[in-house]
Image (cartoon, rainbow, N blue to C red; front, top):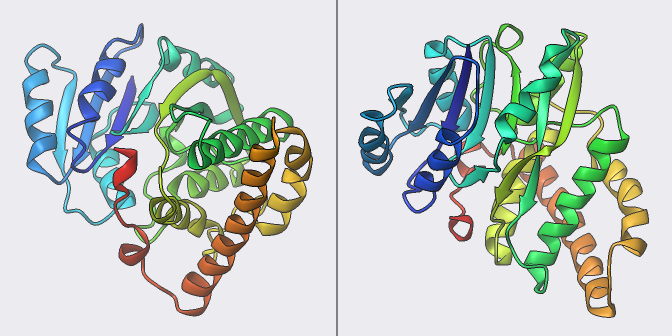
Length: 287
């Protein structure tokens, strides 16, 4: 049994496409799909589809954050394998089946999919999206230690029972917990998930604060990701990825922005100890 869990909040513009992509997957194993969201729009979209798709279920959460929403789904999921994704992205053809293949190996505890930006590369924030997703892609290809992508990943149900609700980056936390239990993490570049990334600096900062913030939380730090490893790992890309002087300039801006981001996170999380609700704010331009 495979349990697919989609977390979402007021994403009526993207959730139908997300569900259409998942319902259209060729999956031979028995499976169930849970959509977790606190809003009526989400509930209405799911209910319209459940008549023709009885494997689809809606769970209303209390809008307490993504970890809390996932914990509700974990309680109802019957699957041996859990697949996690979001309501504002959609997976490629046959990506689900491809994602699950490495789990045939009993030593593999989790598998990450491959995010692809739908943003055009010919503007500042589109270029940043392509640069950062390419950097993550290269890391997953060449390193044995990398976090799964929260946009699309799968893991063995018996390894994770509950996620601490104060966790900023549940994907990094899950990856760390599974690795500490002696299991390996696999990556399938062909398991594609299409993502719209932020289109302005305000939204970019909001998204990166919550996705990167988990890596400086006490006892939830994925040791392979920090400001030092990011700088050293990105040095080669700094000189090889840009295709023009404009892109080289955009890359310099990205490096300064990432430095500012890490300092901001350290200040808010480690010094001021800002809580999850204030960090985890809705990003509108990705919808």
